Image 1 (cartoon, rainbow, N blue to C red):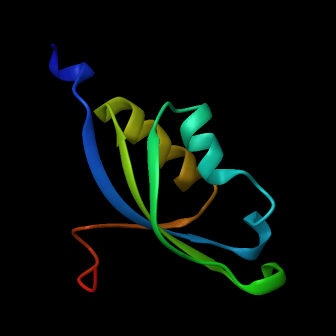
Image 2: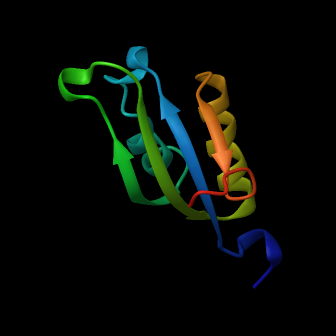
Amino acid sequence: MSSENTLINKRIRIRITQDHHQEPVISRLVSEYGLTVNIKAAILGQNAVGDGWFDLDIQGTETQIENGLTYLRELNLQIWDENSISDW
């Protein structure tokens, strides 16, 4: 198996701002970018008030993960990975 088809895992935390609550952000990571997404923890305000936070384990090829992260960045969502968060 070539390295470009090797599946890797990445742990990230994303902040979903209130203006993105109605968008299927996580669903698009799966359907459009082919990623496997496991939600490890989540906080979303009742009645979509305030920002939400998701701790995600994502799995895919390096290209799929980079494309998915680019999508999240294009939405101007804050993203942290396991190297930038110490309280996990």
